Amino acid sequence: QVQLVESGGGLVQAGGSLRLSCAASGRTFSNFLMGWYRQAPGKEREFVAAIYWSADNTYYADSVKGRFTISKDNARTTVYLEMNSLKPEDTAIYYCHGRPRTGVGSEYWGQGTQVTVSS
Image (cartoon, rainbow, N blue to C red; front, side, top):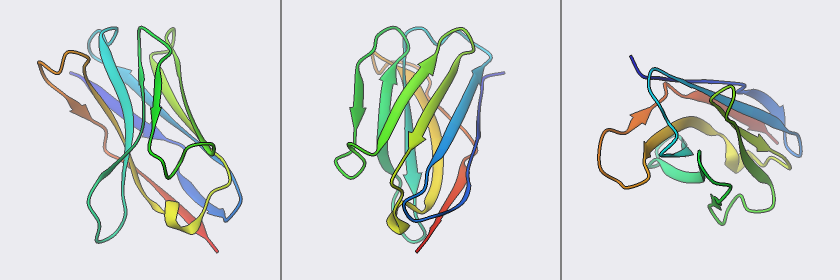
């Protein structure tokens, strides 16, 4: 059974930091693009950041560039999202996502972890 399990969310003051983790299991992810998305109340889910398991290419939404860093630990099959200089508008449920880099095949979502940034 494929699982993406997020952790690390919580409540933090504006300007603070959090690190989210996404532990992947149940299949081989070496040919996957792994990413983070978020959904704020009343808004659509939006892309945050992504990284390939088999390469170091990273991608970021403009709104988080320079503040968030996505990384991976291949040995632990875990993807991280380091979030710094957090703003109240970063408040959302953060979801881990994985899909084949070719775009063909099943994609997977985690259950989400809440991040709340107070002003």
